[in-house]
Every structure is written in structure tokens, then in C-alpha cells.
Amino acid sequence: MRMGHDREVAMTQHDNLLPMDNAHASVFRCPGEPAPVSQSVHLARMASGWHGCRECVWNTSEAPAAGTGSEAEEESHDSRHTVDRNTGIRRTASGVRGAYLNAVDRFRAAQLASIFSTHLARVSQVRQSVRSEKAGVTGPAGVALAMGYDQRHGSQDLYAGVVSAVLQNGGDVYDLGECTCCSLLAFARHHRNVAGSLMVTGAGGSAGEVGLDAFDSDGRSLSVPWNDFGVGLRVPQMPAPADETAGVGIAQRLIGQFDRQTLTSLPATGRQDEQTSCLQLPDLADSTTLFRNGRSSGQLHSLSHEKDYLTWLQRWWPHHMAIRVGFDVATSRVEHRVMRLLPAESDAQFVSTAGDRTDHSGRMVIRISEDDRFATVITRQGRAMGADELADWINHSSRTTNSHVTAHPSQDGDHVLLVDVAGPDSGRSHEILSDGLAVAGLVLTLLQNEKNRLPR
Image (cartoon, rainbow, N blue to C red; front, side, top):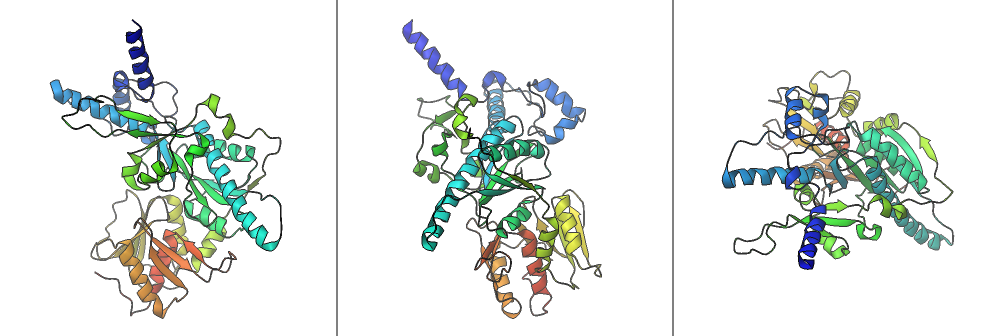
């Protein structure tokens, strides 16, 4: 009896590691509702055009086709893992993402913000100590963060918890409100007392996903030692070979304590990482160490940076333009910026947002993604230039126009970085910029010289 009891307890403990087991494979949780709904209710709401379906991570999930035997089991298995992925908090290149309310609610967002802000404070104190030792000055370093949120559903709700958590931890907050990643990073670059940036965003994720992106004072993605904050890593186990029977049926394993070597050995970017590992945050009872209980809180400064950001962008854009170019942007805010930056007397341009059926044929097109750090240049022949090719073209063309800027492909090869040694506002010797609109303006400026032509 004792052996059977132990086996039952072990199985129960293992099941608790899974967000949803086989019995709940057809259970869905609609945005804004605390209780799950069955698959039949889920399908009925999708068929009737229920308003919450627009923001749901399961808005493309349909009823499985009728099947029997192994075919039906395989379909049930795929459905279960789709649900499991949507209830986890996965790492991305710049932060974390998860389904709104199902994986990331206001409390979870506050937990993540506490971790990010605490680590940014530690990094800032180390840097300040080094500068103070060189200058012969001693004393603790304060921490101030620039923060904002995007237009996605749920971002504003999570932002309230994120700001409260940072203030409770003693950090000062420069609140930019609704903004984009690039305008947030531009503010941080031009304010030397800002130790880093936090962006509540779902950029790069599917509908209904939200999360946080964290950057240091130089605009680089923040690398967090999650183990120092009691955060575990849940890694799906690879399917066992056909000749192995041990471990069959175990869908996931939980790593409660892992070292940094284990963490860094996993992929750091791309969809492969998002499907490889999920963060396991502490429960409420174990989260007291993430929130400081001191009597001193940080200060909140609410401000608008949009006008200053547009002024900064204008130095990258040409004042006159005669070439035919189109812009394909993902958000209305970026669309508004492009309309403000385009020369008023020119009628050779068009701007379309995601989903518009605009004819791009015969024109060069610049595409700005939802994360506006990323820009893609598409030639008149419809070919998208790679980051390395575009960087080489900018460097070659800049010899006749702009000698203080160089372009480089990012480490992952996804976008172009600009190194500006003439940044007049930041006080730094050089700036490393990841800004899609700045890249677009520089490309258009270089094309005003008739000697510069994009490759086919």
C-alpha cells in the first residue's frame, strides 16, 4: 500500500508541473475572465465574433477533425501542447512574453519588473562605483528607469503593476506613457541619470500576448541571472527515441535551481528559444523577497517625449525627396511619425499599415515592424535586403555624404545597428542605435545622391 501511495503522490507532483493535463486539453480561458470555458463555448464565441477573440492567443484554434485510434491521440497531443505553450512565460531576445491574464497578469508583471529593476540597480551601482573610484568620490548610486507601454490590449493594465513594483523597490520612474521601444530608448540615451528602460509590450508575439522588454543604459538587452531571484526554468523534454521506453509520457521537466552555464547554453533568440524554455516564477507566498518592504519609495515623473524624439529623427531624414518610396508600418503611432517626417511638398510616397492591401510594385518599400527597432528595406524588384547587405551598402554610400555614421549587422543578423560618433545630446563619445526610422531616414538621405543606388 505504501508503494502505491508513493507512486500516486509522485504522479500528482509531476502533473502539477504542467499548466494543463490531458483532462483539460480542450479548456480555454478567455481574456478578462477568471474561469476557463470549454471548447464548445470557445468555438461558439469565435463563430459569433465575440469581442474578446481579437485579443486571445487561441483565436486560430479550431475543433479537431474527427478521427479514431492513433490519429485522434496525435491530434489531442498537439492540442494539449498548444495550450501548454500559451500558458507559459517564455524568454525572448529582449525580455519575456506570455498570454495576457493566462500567463502574465498584473502580479506576474510586477514580479518581473521587480527582478528587472533590481538587477538594473545592481548594474548601475557597479558602474557608478567604478566611476566614483576614478573620481575619488564615494557613496551609493541611485537608480532611475525610463518606462512605457505599447498599444496592445492589456499593456496599460500591466503597466500599473509594473510602475508600482519599481516605485516600491525604491526606483525613480520616468513615465513616458504610451510610446514605442525606440522613443523610450532615445529618452534613456539622452538622460545620463537613467540606468535602464522597461517596456511593457507584446511586440513579436501573437495576438493576446504581452510581456516586458528590459534594456540597460546603453540600450542593450538586459541579461538577467534568473537563479539569483529564485526563478526556475521549465524545459520541454525532447521526444524519446523509438527504442526507449523510460520516460515516455513525461512532457516536461522542471529545473528549480540551474546555474548560469545551463541558462546560457540554451538559445537566446528566435522562436526556437520561445518554444524551448519557460520561466517558473515563485508563488505569492515565496515572492516577498522580490518586493522591498522599506519605508522609502521612488518618485514618479510623468512626461511626454514624442516631440523631442521627432526632432531627433529629423536629423536623419532628408528635407527634399524625389524618389518613389513606400512605407509599410505595423502601428498607427509609427504611421503618424512617418507622415510627420516626410517632406510636405513630395507626393511620391505612401504609407500603409499592417493589413492594408496597397500595391507596392515598382517602388522601394521600407517596412517597420511592431518593434520599431527593426526595419526592412525591399528593393523595387520586391527583394528584401539582409542586414549585412544593407549595412555594407550604407557604409559604402556614406563615404560621400555621412562620414560620422557606420552601420553594422546585429549579432543575430536580424537588423542594422548604427554607430554615431557625433551624437550631440547624449554626452557619450558614441551612440549605438537600434532604430528602424533612423535607418530608414539614413537610407533615404543617401539615395538623394544620384551616385547611390540600391542593388536589385
